Amino acid sequence: MAAEELNIIAYLKTHCGWSEGVRAIMRKYDLSFEEKDIIQNPAFRWEMEQKSGQPLSPCVEVNGEMLADVSGEEVEQYLVEKGLLDAREAAPDAPIDSSCTDEQHAAMEREAAKGTIRFIQE
Image (cartoon, rainbow, N blue to C red; front, top):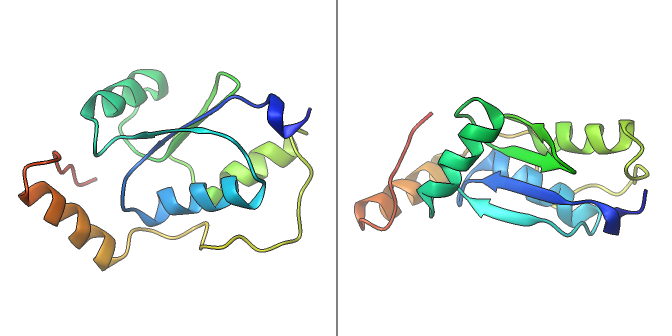
């Protein structure tokens, strides 16, 4: 299956190491995907929880198959193992298996303090 035939929806946080790892895999393979920011839009968090059956992110839906609470590394492994794309040796442009840094948590707290988002710590 060609990458352009994939329908990918990624439920991600604005500032998060795990979420950035998923984005890095999308960039590595030049994959088109719909990003749903669960911090900026709480309705996307609700949608993710309904589809995945759990509250942890990132969650990535690939052609209707939900990958819940995954790292970029796990997303890449899934896509390759299912034959949805061919593995590339190139390194991603960001860590694909890292938690949020202190700076990313601080950024989420700053946004929450502005009243623009609802901060949910997992």
